[in-house]
Image (tube, rainbow, N blue to C red; front, side, top):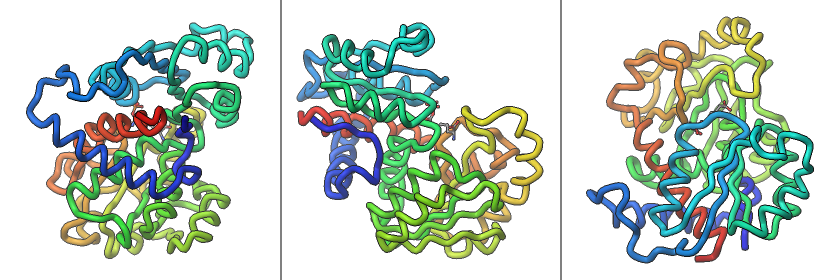
Length: 308
Ligand code: CP
Ligand code: NVA
């Protein structure tokens, strides 16, 4: 049994194996109706709890559909409706759920909730996003990059805007998959120094750049995300907009990157804020492949967790 809590705490060969398996599983389903069961049904007789303490479209639907395609069943639970949201401890919740279900995916606020759930659960726990990280997203992103432009190893990834949870998982992935990482944003929104140091200790060329145009020179991949995340106070919105406006991904910025550079965004996006519609809908954008690949990548993650 394996927990999938973070990219940097998961073995690099195992991560590679999951990406490769996801690609094979995706190929095998090409052209089939979405509800067609996978031939091997690896999750037959398994029940997976999907707990959401924050909103979600992609994570909720992709996990639910993925489990069903693999022959399992899901329970989609809102944290607020559980006793967890009314004072029951995380440890007790973990012990109880382990008696009913075979795996737990949770989207929550504090990373400590995820860690405690994993510590006390007897079944695998998957990180479906915390305030600090979003590893499932980056598994889909690596898969998407490689599908379009080949191995990500040695490539230059440029993150624009807020050094948030998705940015953190990209930094973790840089260490595990061996790509260069440039952060383009203002000093007050830098990624956590601990994550930068960790990536550098693994030999990643991490560059912190204040000038967006300089940052994207020679980029193979340009990434944007919302300027205000779900866990951020809405009162920061105006200040962040002023701070981050110079980091908007628009056609002019994309022209500074390599000719075959890709654009990614985990979605949901705020069109004309962190990215223009012309980029989102342009030929370099792979945002909907990225969204689709959440499904395939997470199916491989779930198989790895259960060893099936
Ligand atoms: N990218 C992502 O995790 O989307 P949702 O918030 O819709 O799940
Ligand atoms: N950084 C965003 C990602 C959403 C999928 C957030 O945490 O709200």
